[in-house]
Length: 256
Ligand code: SF4
Image (spheres, rainbow, N blue to C red):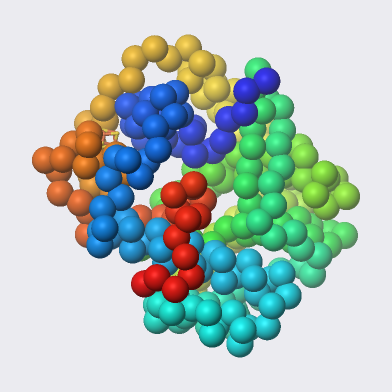
């Protein structure tokens, strides 16, 4: 069965042409316009550095050692905030940068998690957000749906314990916010709602044979393909959300 990720589903909903380029034609986003010095490049570097710093820290490296490797002042400030508050209320048993899969319809959903943390009572999905715009209505975002659905179906493969939806939470942690933790509960009702929605979306993607460009040019301003797809549209002034992609993971510690 073919794998499908939340990012593919989100791209399909955002712009079908973007989905075509990335997920059907397999084009590398960097080819399409990660411009040196652009907001997206800066966001990618900072996001990658922050995620790596947290990964090292949660894997047992001393905070001083991690801090000494961060050259970007903004990322260092984010990391300081994380060390103070980031793991507040999070269960002790943890798996960093982990992933799980769950079959649905004729696909396999794949979820890559920044962190899964659990105890005997609950499973917490943690996701660090470094973009300058908070996600709107996170309960109905595709990422939230996929992450929680896969955790409910297959989290046991990571944790060794099966959890009911009511025992699962997702925590978005916004590095730029004064009160960065946004924790969202889950329920059996939401699990069933999300399963229906994800099935519908998988079927819609499988049947799709028309991939028009989006009418929302605001989306294009931070699109990875803007420079080759719609070069007449200026780049956005905000820093978009970091994603684990091949080009983002190739950016090193010391760059700023
Ligand atoms: S630049 Fe706009 S139209 Fe082109 S792929 Fe990106 S979002 Fe779609």
